[in-house]
Length: 193
Image (tube, rainbow, N blue to C red; front, side, top):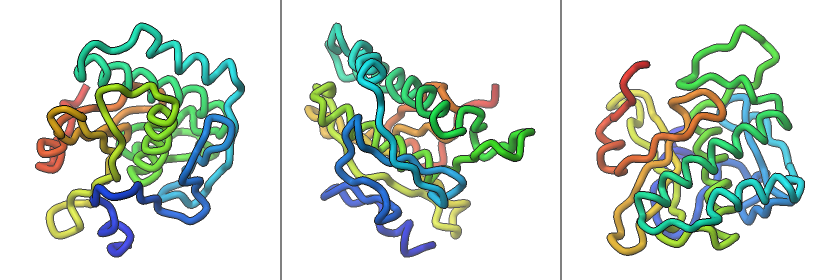
C-alpha cells in the first residue's frame, strides 16, 4: 500500500490507483470506485440531461478563483448525488463512518479522491474551469505521522497555489472541503458538527 500512496503528489500527470479506472473520462464513459480503496469499480455513463445539470452550475461563469471553487464544490456534490443513485453509494457516510445498512457501499479517502479527480477531469475537459487546472491527488500521513489520507487537488492558474478538494469528510452529496493544500497537509480537519 505504501508504494501506491507514495506515487501520489507529482504534478506531471494524473495518477489513478487501478489500471481499470478510465484515465480519460468523458460524461458518457467514466469510472467510479467504492468499497474501500477501489475494491469495486463501475464504468458509467451520465445521461445528457444529467451532464447539463452540471454545466448549468457554471452557466453564469465564475468571476474569480474563489467563486469558481464554490461552483466546483456544488458540481462535485451534485455529481455525488447523481452517481450515488446509480452505484448504491448514496448513503455513504463521511470520514469512514459506518452505515446501518450492510449493503451500502462505503467509500474511503482513496475512493473519494479518485472519484473527485475524475469529476474534476470532466469539468476541465468540458471547459468549465477557467481559474483552475487539475493536479494529481496528494497523500498526507504515511503511517509515521498519522493515518494516511488522500485528497483530489486543483491549482489556481494565476497564483499557482494548490488547493485540496476533499470530499471524504462529509456524507455523500455534501460539498467537499476546498482549502489551501499546505493547510490540509498539516492535518486539517473540519470542526465537528
